[in-house]
Amino acid sequence: MKFRYAMVCSSNQNRSMEAHCLLKKQGFDVSSYGTGAHVKLPGPSLREPNVYEFGTPYKHMFEDLRRKDPDLYKRNGILPMLKRNLSVKLAPQRWQDNAADGYFDIVFTFEEKVFDMVLEDLHNRDQVLLKSVLVINLEVKDNHEEAAVGARLALDLCEQIEAVESWEDSVDDIMISFENKHHRKLMYSISFY
Image (cartoon, rainbow, N blue to C red):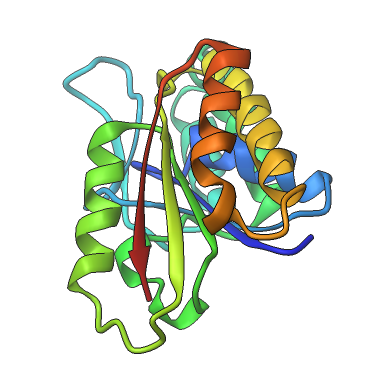
């Protein structure tokens, strides 16, 4: 694979990790991140989420929730999701703290708010390399079913990007082709490292 990819959602739990897992299995050079202040997972009610710091191992979250209410977190898919996550990487990582990870060629976000935060962060960084990065938003609802669909769509788009010599020369055609094929509107922007 020619390019380095980043998958980004709010908590680096569902949408970004589903895509990270699928692309990793397909041999892509991929990482994943969240942009939120904390990692939030559903709790017993909307007003009682489970909140963790970025960097808290997925295994710790899994054991914590299994201890709190194994039936609830198995039924709502959180325990299986965390089990998948810990097979991909150690812990959720925050996009804004990833400068040491180097640069990415392509960054996928799965929510417009996250797209805006990634672009803002890139614009606030020192742009010393003058290396272009394509940031794409593929809007995906934050549930397990839609995350699986979003991951397959992200894989399809990554495969289209990999098929061209230079994405900079073909980006508009790739996006139009994807939108026509899948009837999904994309937002995208080019930034720099």
